[in-house]
Image (cartoon, rainbow, N blue to C red; front, side):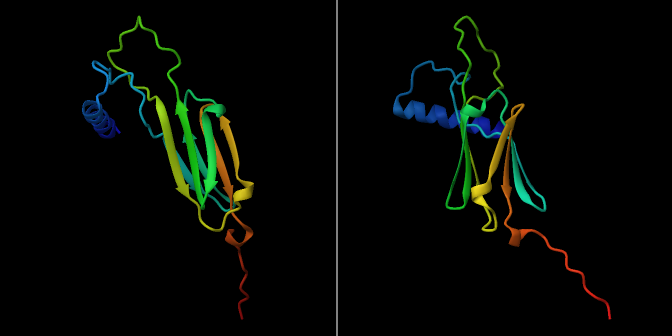
Length: 141
């Protein structure tokens, strides 16, 4: 992630230079795009997406579905800028994010459920009955 962050800062600097960004603008406090850590889990009944979103509230997050793609978007805002502080190092990420997940055709999109607790978003995408594993007993002759 450090390489991605470095590349993002270089690209921001390049665009600021080319399009006339503000002089002396600090890279450290510039809002940028970031990618929260996400786990995608499959069990017998559903696909579960767990996203770590520390410092956010459920009102900061938007979940939508279009063309069999689940999108999770949001923005983590800097709580309050204090002009008396000078940052020597800032490792927490701020700014907007967007993660998309293609959904298989065998899910119930109208039954998707989301829960946000302790900084973790849990989205449960239930499988249709046809997609659930079935056990068939075979008789031995």
